[in-house]
Length: 263
Image (cartoon, rainbow, N blue to C red):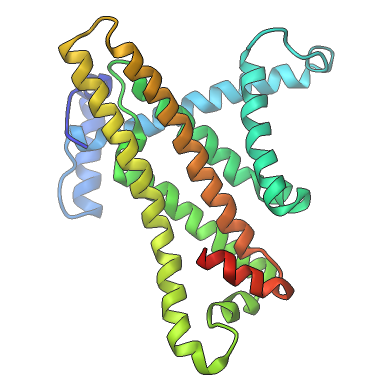
C-alpha cells in the first residue's frame, strides 16, 4: 500500500510519544525503526477495535433490556445491524458444519467478521486508513485463523488430525505429508494477500478519484468500494469456516474430508 497522509498521521504527530514508542518498539523487535506511516495501520486497527467494543457494549445494553429487545426495530438501527451481521455468518457456519459446531466455533468467525467489516468500511471515509490495506494486519488476522483451526482440529480429533495429513496409505506418507503441510501453510498467506490487495487497490483508487474530482463522480466508486468491502468480509469468513469445518470433521468422514481439502 503506498504511503500517504491520513487522519492517523496527524494523530501520531499530535502525540509525539506514540511515534517515539513505536519507533523504539520496531527497532527492538524488528531491528529497524518504525516510521509514522508504517505505524498507521496499527493505530488504525486499534481504533477499529475500540470502535467495535464501544458499539458492542451499546448493543449489549439494548439486548439485556428484554422489554425492548423482544420487539424488532421498525427501522435499521445499531442493534438490528449487528443482529443481521451475526445471523448471516452464523447461518453460513450452521449450514456448513451443523448447529453444534457452528455455535462452538462461531466466536472466532464472528469476531473476524466484525473487525474486518469495520476495518474495510472506514476506508471509505475520507481521511481514514483501512487497516486491512496493510499486509501486516491481514497476515496477523490470517495467522490467528491458522492457529485456531489447527488447534480445533487437534482438540477434536487428536492424533487422527495429524494422521490424516499423511494420507490413507503409510507408503504414500513421505509424498503426501509435505504436500498437505505446504497446503496448510499456504492458507494464511492466500487469506491475507487476497484481503490486503483488494482493499489496498480499492482504497487507492478511491483516494486518486477523490483527489482529482471531489464531487459526485466518486459516488459510484464508493458504492463499488462498499460492495468490495462486504464481499471481502464474506470471503474471509467463508474460507475460515471451511478450514474449521475440515479440521474438526471426524475421522470416520476422512475420505470426504480429503476430497474437500483438495477441492
